Length: 464
View (tube, one colour):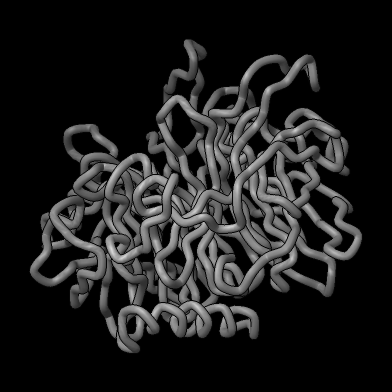
């Protein structure tokens, strides 16, 4: 485990313990937050009010941020990469897979779901007629600038999220399940050469070999997180009305391509975790075997083969599991529409104690609506990407170790013939949030029109 990871976890748990006891895994209930005049229920002031801030690259006020914060954009869709190819669109999950001093290597997903054809070489292409994949970028954290960018995986479908690995690679997860053969994308018929709905490994220093990790399952994948001590990979599933939380145990630690076994979480005494629970609820957890991870399409033709098998064997049901992040022995993950208010949950699984806890459940849309990707700051707070369906600007939220929720950033994207864009894109989601190891930079994607930003400013220990 990296020293910055150890420090972040210690800070997070120490501050949490001050309000819920030293044995607690997560955060205090939101009902205990101090009420503050003028703020929606459950919110705190955080870094203060947001206002438009000009992008250091384009000069446009793309984001609203608190006072003192700045940012620069890069990797815009359609702009040329270092390898001469145009940058793909639909910027989604992302992670820092390698740090060499100030030189940071990020891999970014592109959740393209059409028949536009591959954007990479044949050696990195899985299915030549579809247009999803990943790009790799190198950022200089001292100079605050992008050094290079290139294609690193192509020919995949809806690469939604994924996760970093301790062996300096990115697990890119497909969110669309299809058999090989005829498929229709926007009235265009394509003959798929392979089945889809798998995980792919992308090394930091070269292109992926585009070989699916079939033993990790065929399903509506979302995110992945590696428990460094064991090498086990935890995976979320963005499915409705039933989703599972999965654990892949590799045959050989660090060598996922050599196969392993897939398991689904079972919370003792709680077959259904979608509703009816409170902040702080804890459950002993065990795991049920998925005997046929490669069968993502069930007998009825639905793309629920893995979760149906898991539920039949006693696994517990979640709904729309998305972001997943490992910190020490704790794996945090979000249920985008879980909870009694259907507004979202944050869960934490303790791999050492085999225990699950409901860290936070949003009591109303006005507090937090549809949390998606999440990441931990080296200072101890969590950043949450909200993917709201409401007609409002999309936001980033901070979640403090004491249970305080606050708005940190807002999409302010309104364009007038910029890169050929005109219109209001403020409802486009944030995705792929991740902090530099030293905590100076927060990287995050704006899904549409597709660009990445690096944000810096006066971070605080008690917030982010």
